[in-house]
Length: 129
Image 1: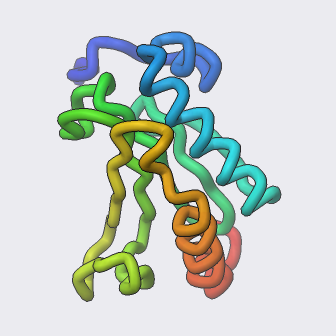
Image 2: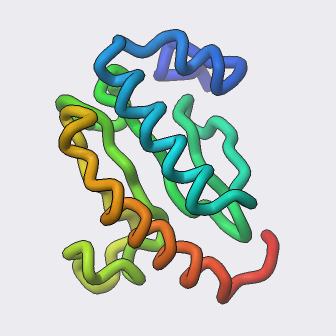
């Protein structure tokens, strides 16, 4: 089976080098918030974008320049098992919930931290995969 993405980043650093500057700034801010809020998180590429893991997949960052994510512009911060994040407006039963930021100024740092705390609480219910 061929790779429909036509590209395969070897590392997060390679991924970051590929981003347009506006997206890079948003991605870096989101990564910083994730690492500060959840210091024990592990980051690795999946689907050629950064995913963050604890016991299970916790969150991901998906910029619009990575076209197979169906993000039209900006950078999405997504949460796996989003059904636990109902305050964010997730519909019950939702598996993935995401927020799209079109600029660094749009990033609500307190909201991102709160959602990360909630995602960690949800993740704590599970043992290491």
